[in-house]
Length: 206
Image 1: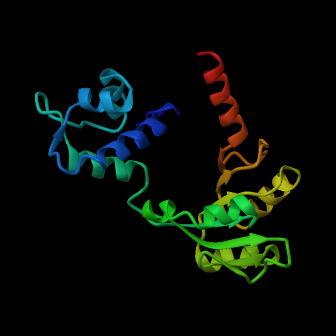
Image 2: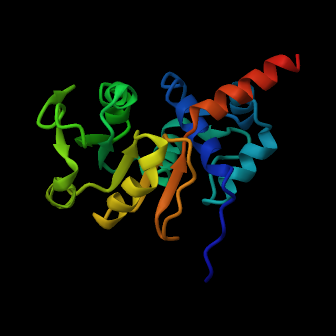
């Protein structure tokens, strides 16, 4: 049977539902209407999103909070632990290395990389910074599955290609550049400038 295609906009909403449910530990059941109030999505949209992944909830009672939270955690892959590396130990990179929220969700940054010799073998927030020449060996040794790129735009494509060549197939890219990589490599572009511009647009339209 062919796998049902999941619209790309569904996943961010699932993440939102999961975070909301984590705030309702004192409740046994929650309705789609209550989730709607908390998330801003319609209750119809919420029910439709869940149908992509099976049957959830009981008519008249809503959703069992613990069961739904457990199901969403599995769907989002948060029931596993992922080893992650960061490439680019500049100001943004250092801030991300010190962010504890990743580990709470099962994403463990186990290594950092940089070309700046003054940073090599330094320890930042408990994480060692390695030379890019050690990339392949460290990825294999630490079984790294994901990479966060916080490098300058002019070297981002080259660095991304090195990361892919090391065996990593999932990249979070913070540089304002669209990467051209093989189709089997999963990339998420996180351009903070674009997000600020979007916010500026929204405010200016008020």
